Length: 329
Image 1: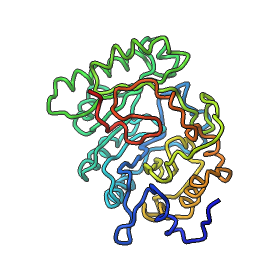
Image 2: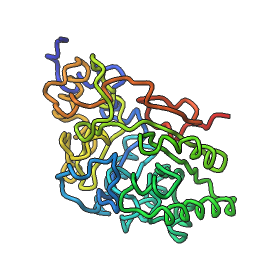
Image 3: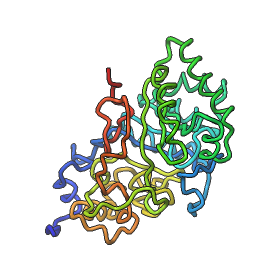
Image 4: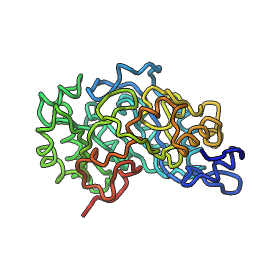
């Protein structure tokens, strides 16, 4: 164990790769991305998603709080905002207002969707206000798709995706990057090659991953012995839930590890607070006993095999911001 008798602020300055760096007695983000959950309400209950285990309240983020967080994010060096997490993006009635405000502050905008609600009207706004949209589609046949994405209609999603691609093709001024993601599971492994054949040539990027465990939410991956820090407490990105609570990362689906509250604290205060520092120490020392949710997380095992295929340049397991990397030529 390393001696950590010095102050919390000194701890922040000492840690290699820490998420903040001191600049005129203020701190700025080393990782330029902030992730804000617009809502944790979803219109589906997909098999890989542990929604039945989520106990936290469901709702839609307050627009004024969102704007305050965006303003603070810009002040500490954010360049990108991801409007997504444990809900369907387009359930949020304010999603385009959020994107427009973020764009007005000079931020790149990203979102993830199941595309079930992405009709033509919403698609047009996406092409105006989002730099990147990632569509999760884990089946290209009706039976497989609806077995995995429970509650959604395959025909609706297929129509919406085709419409978005067609509109983007007909809108040369749009710079929206469209990505398609596929999770490789027993239910759909026979469709992976067809998925790639269908979408790799008509979208900007594709990726195939094996599913993760969502901490204690699922059991897709087995532990591999020694745990190694995922580095998120040091490298970010900042993860904000719809109600303003800050958690370590997107895998904390039930807000089990609250590091701060942006309703009452600033980003500066949260990053320099006791809870964040305790988590950093645990990850630096490799002792996760005080953080049971981290302790069972499959992200502490560096399994390179979980990234099956992608044409995104430099994408790798554990990397952040890979959606902004160049597509391989």
